Length: 211
Image 1 (cartoon, rainbow, N blue to C red):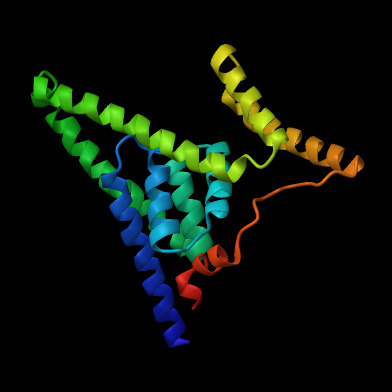
Image 2 (image 1 turned 180 degrees about the vertical axis):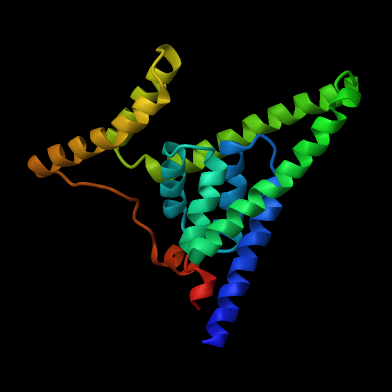
């Protein structure tokens, strides 16, 4: 019992440390953080698979609030329950809050500094790259067949060329997915809901705290 509690506390501390590192090291917030979260959670720690990460990002993006904080809450809860969620959300928001508080205090000094403005422009460009990387990783796990490709293309066109709010696309996504699955089953077609993982990948994806 005591040993189990110790392991639980060690896991909670690990979650806190990982997200505490992610918060101040990633500029742009939101989807810009997804690539860093994926690197830490999937690649380094092995706590989740790429498919689970993709599902988590989809759910986090459709829920109210910031996607980075939502992602931290979902990952923390999946790994350590309510204490894990609290640790993850606290860790990812605390450094950012302190940094923003300090920068806002010093904004009067830095706002007209040419070097600072140039640095911020460089950061903006890097943020675009981070978002593209995150989108690419989601593409690999979310685009499974022609149907999902068409849904993604239609959603992109609607976002770019119409005034439709993303909220309606988020609501319509599950409905469209259900209709596509029902249609395929009625026609006797194969229904693909996730990519087939190889045996080698599955071994690498077991959360280390299960061992």
